[in-house]
Amino acid sequence: MRRDNRRPDELRTLEILRGFTQAAAGSVLIRAGDTHIFCTASIDEAVPAWREASGHGWVTAEYDMLPGCTPERRPRSRGKVDGRAQEIQRLIGRALRAVVDMTRMGPRTITLDCDVLQADGGTRTAAITGAYVALCDALSAGQRRGLWGADVLTAGVAAVSVGLVGGDLLLDLDYREDAAADVDCNLVLTTQRQWVEVQATAERAPYTDADLVRMLEFGRHGIEQLFALQRAAVGSGQPL
Image (cartoon, rainbow, N blue to C red):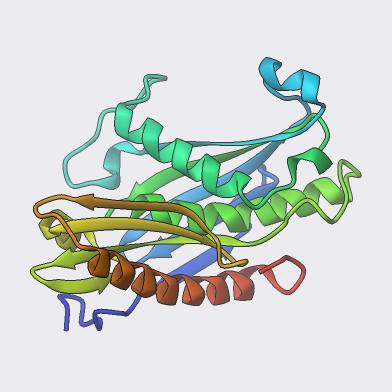
């Protein structure tokens, strides 16, 4: 058993609260254990200049950790994005674009803003899982406004972390487990069972082909559970 009494293959307690605020087209608070992230999805009836000629839409993301999300206060970014945040927001954007048919959006942008309220590991994976639900709500709102049809989403998507810690394979690492991991792996999978991202990093020791296969199997098991939780939050109207 782990520090929080979970089995090695057990997710942290997950809660997805839709409609957490009223202003954004999609708004979700996701709690994965002690990691809490506020995800919003906003619609802009324009696209970046480089995208205009295509006539297609765009999905992008921004990610930040708020000052009080960790025991030691983090300074505000004030428009300056550090390398870690830039890498994570690019990952979130890639994950969500993988399940959107942007040719059907018209020249419009959906921006996913993922702000970490409290961090205890796994912020990037929880952000993807929560941002998908916010995206579903934004797409439904756009459809009601007549901006696009019902066929923009092509699949669902969710993400989870896996790690090798002291020789043990663990699912959904908290901060202490992540900090002690020999290998840290972040996985993003669609409901069509296609991998969007496999980030497996040897933090303290290299890993074998067999280790990678085991991590993928562990991760797939966890993400299947996340799909079920997303489905319960969204309902049956989306391709989960």
